[in-house]
Figure 1 (cartoon, rainbow, N blue to C red):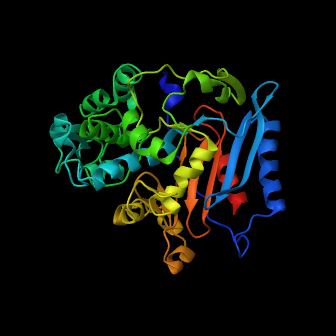
Figure 2 (cartoon, rainbow, N blue to C red):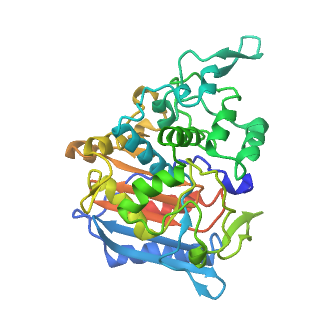
Figure 3 (cartoon, rainbow, N blue to C red):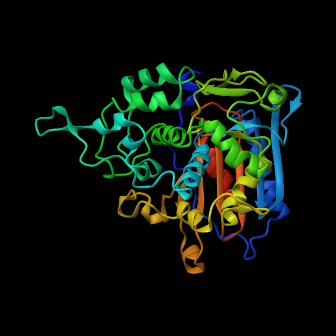
Length: 396
């Protein structure tokens, strides 16, 4: 599983809502504009295919495709595609299930689960410009992992050497244990920094595995996928569904080049990416999104308490919110970004909640408009973030 495929680039691709229609209705002209955007992107060879969905409450209002699964085969509306960092929403949900059961607490030190984290060191630069390591001033907690304030802003050759030694070869827990040997780049709790891959969620996945005694895949299957009827959500596709995984392309020197053939998945391993390993189909995405619209319960199946869902969809950074985000009402909750417009605040509703993955996937839930919106196209990172922004602009 080469690292170049798995880079989960951090891009804030959340556009401010436009005025839209007063009743929030979808119009034929608006839908046609979105379809035209997707078709034009294929014609311009920015992408080879796309699938997108707009839903209100439990009803799909529009499910559209463009391009081909492989030459001669139109893109399918039930295509199963990687979510990359959008998968953090699933991992945060899994963590909060354990939180509600009292099996983990937000202020638990990570060293309670992974003892190596008790020896975390922070790299600082002194007045002479020399880098040195100092002890962490406080323990890294589960809350720090959920909010990307753990200081795990790891990058460079040492990080990728650790990544390559584990991804697809060992387990998420083994990776987390070795990750702590690399110096933190800020004190725990000091500031928000997503980092290049959002590595805090790989460590969070290890906490979930150790606390539950199950792999991340097993825990999500038993507590999220099966209860919600997510029959097309996986970490690795079963062979009988491989034809629903389209060809994946990569942009090289401005041109699309084949990266993975139709149905070609990563080799199955015991490493389950907490930061972005889930893949899914649009109808499953709708059901999962309803979890946040409907206060933690879907069609009578309760996964989380309403107050827990509200917590996940609320600003958890406070004064740690990056300054560049504040004018837009943007911050981070648990698992995804949150965006509170003045209209959301006036209505007393949570703001938009969602995230992007790899520059090719985007999901958000908008409680004020009762909207769930999703788009995905089969590109390897860095994808086409401008197209994700344009999709959201056209939706509103």
